[in-house]
Amino acid sequence: MKKRMLHIALLTSGGDAPGMNAAIRAVVRAGIYHGLEVTGILHGYEGLINEEFVKLNASSVANIIQRGGTILKTSRSLRFMTEEGMARAYENLVKNKIDGLITIGGDGTFRGAEQLNSKYNFPVIGVPGTIDNDMVGTDMTIGYDTAINTVVAAVDKIRDTAESHDRLFFVEVMGRDAGLIALRCGIAVGAEAILMPEAPVNIERLIDKLKNAKRKKNSKIIIIAEGDEAGGAFEIARKVTEKVKGYDARVTILGHIQRGGTPSCMDRVNASRLGYEAVLALLKSQQGIMVGIVNKEVAYTALKKSAKHMQKLDSELLKMLEVLSM
Ligand code: F6P
Image (tube, rainbow, N blue to C red; front, side):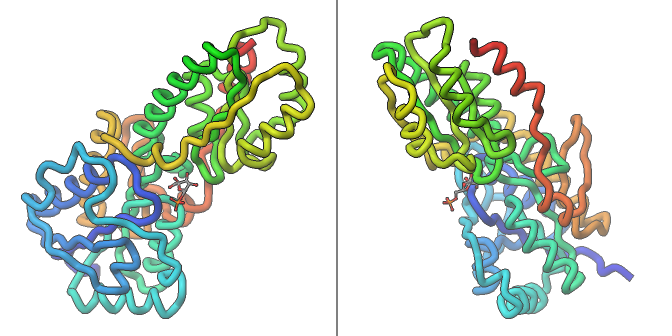
């Protein structure tokens, strides 16, 4: 017989993402609404191993929906991936009489969550939170919308100066193994080309494109996803400018600016819904799944599947960019 859910815990893990606080607020308040005790675990899986537990009530999460980052703090825990670390984490859950755990994070977080669930049969529900949007089972991960708007705002500023100086800019955006930030933002800023791991543009093609540019625009912007196999923005800029003369080139790496800031309306609403649904999933005795939203409907996906697979890149969008960026 399944144990009745009386006490739940939650943590955020991996890279933080704007909107995580909205998800935390939703888990806490939905939990309290359903008569549950709610415990927050600080510093992700590290805090689970070190027993950094705090009781949360409705006012602990007041006035956080609009704040970036995560009030629970986060970490990338290597210890949790060891047998010893995971055993300690499980012992702490049992010792503190916790019946179910909600983990908010990306693929690394879900790999850990899946193992905790399958190894110890402990109820775990995942909430997708990463700016990279590289998970299956949800249209949008928490933080992606804010991050892409941050990138667009930054690159628009770069366009102003690029245009004034007639320069070629190589702008590197985040997304360790995924080009979803690069693709959306590249289209939105009218980039001349996008380089990303899923669709490696051969450098020679980019060079030809720049050499043969029919319409000599005053500025050109190439968006590069940090995981691109041709190298980072500096390396690509070097390779290109060695072969294409006549451009005054510059490189900008946007970096962690993409992970911070006030969450967008979309992220706040998405995160609230996902947090709320994660509590309902635990109450329905679900475990080992991620809650997502697909075509406006709540969807459950096995943690195993979600952590291993990325969203497919929309190749039509890439084609469209080729046409529009002439
Ligand atoms: O969380 C996702 C992400 O922002 C990736 O896009 C990036 O590669 C990575 O995290 C950077 O991680 P860290 O802040 O640990 O260096």
